[in-house]
Length: 138
Ligand code: THU
Image (tube, rainbow, N blue to C red; front, side, top):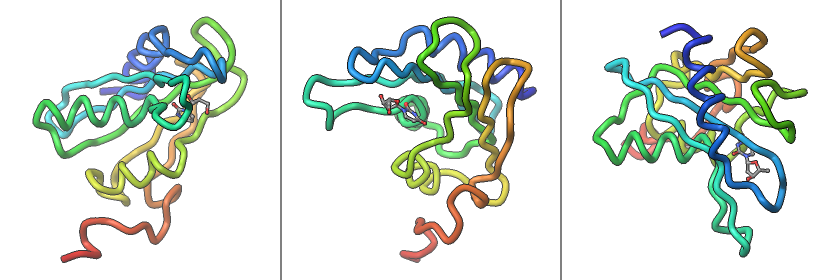
């Protein structure tokens, strides 16, 4: 799957973002090792703490459907409505830790987008160096 195709899915998922407190709307789409795609949006809560990021929504949806290996994730987030945003929304530390659980750091790609045409790619290794993961417990 191309980065553009995956970003398109993230843009669609972003339309469902529930962010009445931050007004920062995020969409994510993750591609499994088998080539299927799961999407997610951020879901906030009046108590703030229970809020969930778009990336974790997508990952947890996929894991709950039996997928545990992933190729890449596309993320788009911003205050703007519509299909493009002003800045790159890189994943928060909690989401990076969750990625560490299921993704191979040197291969898993994180595509952060401002639009379908404008994006940057990183490996998990680059964004979460020396992260603690399942290998540390083996
Ligand atoms: N958020 C995400 O969903 N993903 C990110 O990568 C960064 C932050 C959400 C959490 C919260 O609902 C809002 O964006 C503002 O932090």
